[in-house]
Image 1 (tube, helix red, strand yellow):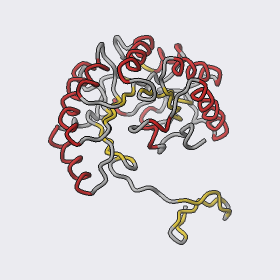
Image 2 (spheres, helix red, strand yellow):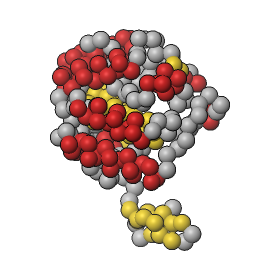
Image 3 (cartoon, one colour):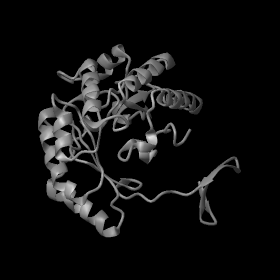
Image 4 (cartoon, helix red, strand yellow):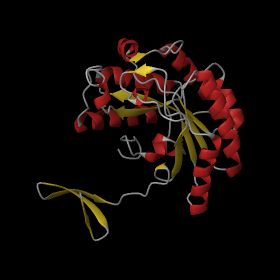
Length: 268
């Protein structure tokens, strides 16, 4: 990757593949103040390196300091929170609710990506959240049981029920869920999963797996090819259109960012 006349150019064998610009990062991603609250997790999902570290938990003062800095720069457009599970999902929801209530004074859309609990959607909505994400991770039940370990009470069915409830609380185009690509699932499984979520009003985010060296030997996974990602993203785009779901209406978190994923309706 080289710079030419103010543009960024990606070359392969001296041949130009693509030309563009790099959006400046506000806080974690372009045009968003995206903050991880708990940088630790008691669960042991095999695709995730977070449980391997004893990360910190940002205090409310630290979060407000980040938001204030972005506001002073003139770039405060949205706020998004994500979090691991330091102790229990219930404690994490309590913490997130407190932080959301503290930042809603900025009058910008707020997105939250957390583990759901009973009644968490209504609590988050009442606190001031605009959009929510509960991740299924995979719609292959065998893979879920093998890879998403340690989630007491967090079965795939519980997450699906929580997503269904979230749509009732937040409405269509305000609820999303990650499906990781590369865990051994078939394309047909992805198609069925995307459509199952779309039928209930949830937008699936296809997340190509990043295989962490800290998980070496613990998981069999393959980074999906560009061809496969394009195919699945186009399929997702068509399914979302079928169920009248609109990615462009999403204001926070992964869908408007497009940094880690191909986003249907935006990239393809």
